[in-house]
Length: 359
Image (cartoon, rainbow, N blue to C red):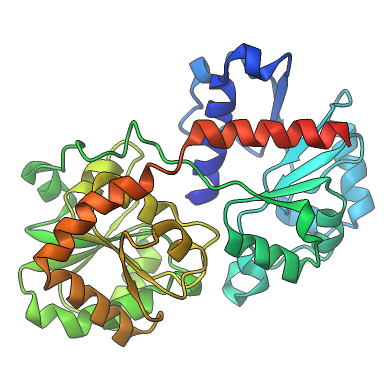
């Protein structure tokens, strides 16, 4: 899912920064609980990875402990004192041995009851960092408001785009592959989770009103199969296929073969699926209430006026009924996605490390 995808790409691109630009930085990676699967790219990590520990405790357990106890535990486990510590989730606080920075993508637990809870010490832990990195202006506003952070502490560094995997020349999945997935004919694609902020229930209601007018189309849901199936069954909309998770290697061809990506989320710190679809030249429908997704998509997609089913149906109908609009978005999408670069993201993160170390 999103956070693990981000962490993998950040680590790989930190490893690919030229040695002269990286000076003599050394990186020690600590993963919670288990080895990354699939394994990280060893070639990208040769220049970056010095040691990896696998901690035997969960973030849920940490959240039940006082902050001082958590930091003491992390200090004991972190080995020698680093120059900078970077935590990739607010649920994993910074030890006290070194200047620290956080990456915080967004704060859905503070807005949605079904997204878990922030640790009781979350605000205090965020204030202890030298800097906090986040991918959008929307996410920055959330952090400033909900964690009461000074604006100058929060640095916006947009995510990059995997241009080697998502580009207009990617071949769409062929009929044999689509049939293996259970897809027949043309389809609209949703890729993402199932929680309330993902707004899948509204998408299904919108599709229910739209489907009779487009009998050649299926709505395909890529993501956690059981909860997405439950939502589809509740909506009782026609021609909906919850296909489960799609592998890392197969997602570009699945997305490329879609008539459009529909991403109805009402809360995102960034929104990688719309960015990836744009890079492929696949038209995108989003919600104006999508948090950061309007920042990412700009004028290169169709934006529903809100996240309600009527507005989503109207936006989908606008796209499907206008071939000239579809052709324009197939050109505008890759142009928009070209603004996002993982190499530039990694270099900006390294610059934050330098600033944190310099105090």
